[in-house]
Length: 167
Length: 284
Image 1 (cartoon, each protein chain N blue to C red):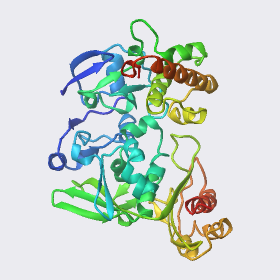
Image 2 (image 1 turned 90 degrees about the vertical axis):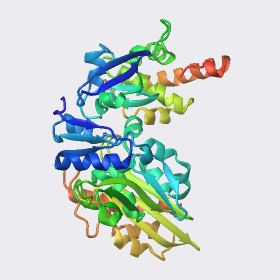
Image 3 (image 1 turned 45 degrees about the vertical axis):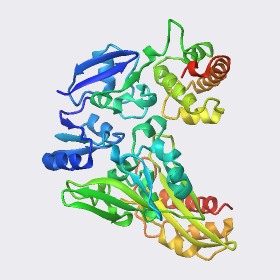
Image 4 (image 1 turned 180 degrees about the vertical axis):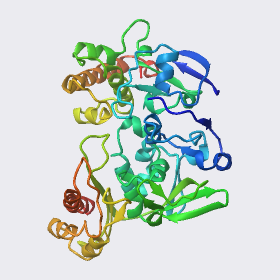
């Protein structure tokens, strides 16, 4: 079995894995990172979205062995020093979740969107999150939350040394 | 579901990949971005014995300038293609169409060559390569050869790549002074195009000097709307004339009937979307 070394939420793991092991199963079943849910099985819904080397990917469509040497961020690794990431905080403040199943993927896809485009319009937010489905159809508040996080992150980035600005 | 068992190898050069594929024989399958293959493995619609993963073959990534043409490495991700300055400058149709492929997370993994080798007539990029008269560059045990895009797509999910061959890149002619548009009709981001139209138009003195039109999901392979191309040549670059020419878009096509639309609906869509695509490409 191939041996992989993956850094997940800041911790490096070395494991021998079957080639067919999906990244999402590795995260959940091997590392206990059950904050990453499995939604659809078909690369559609985006619930299992994580950041791999900074870019959003659907972890049901990546093999664990392909993550060898990569750095993966799940929803469980987004908060720092006990403080919620601004995107998590905005989802909380704007009530951007109902059942919560899509939320980890939404939040990670949204942070990736802001990395590319720190000040997106509502349309750009909807485009950026088009790979993430909310079965409760709570999109209005999700868009509000991303807008709010963008404003807060831009503000805090301007107030601090740009090198220390987050995501 | 969990995929069936397979062996896995991740070569770092094309030569290694070709050898690995040869050793695996008929039961080996190339893994590119995996955004189509992984769901097929999960659903157990595909069960190869060996996956040859090209993700670590650095020479297959990136876009290079070859004078009159660009060569897009097969493993260049959609995300990179959309932003690539050379593609945007010389073959903007590819960037426009690629930006409509699925969603950002899929575009981070999915690759230009992977979508073409998959040969799904409902994929956006096959029709674009056919419209642009691109050439596919394949490497196999007997060396390298080029295949015109028009001869690359043999049937539904079937290309003319030979067993053991890998699509390594695509040569796309630079089209200076042309206008482009990709018009796609689909229900949601992740759905395939019900119908898509790739249009390239060259204007001269207020008329259409030349046009090329490729159709997505209007048959088992991507097709050129040759009747439209002939009809539009020399006409005025005005919406009415372009829509009139577009009424021939479905000629000679054999569109599928499925959950998303019947064949006659697709024929209708092809005409409407071709008119829009031509008008947008001609900037009228």
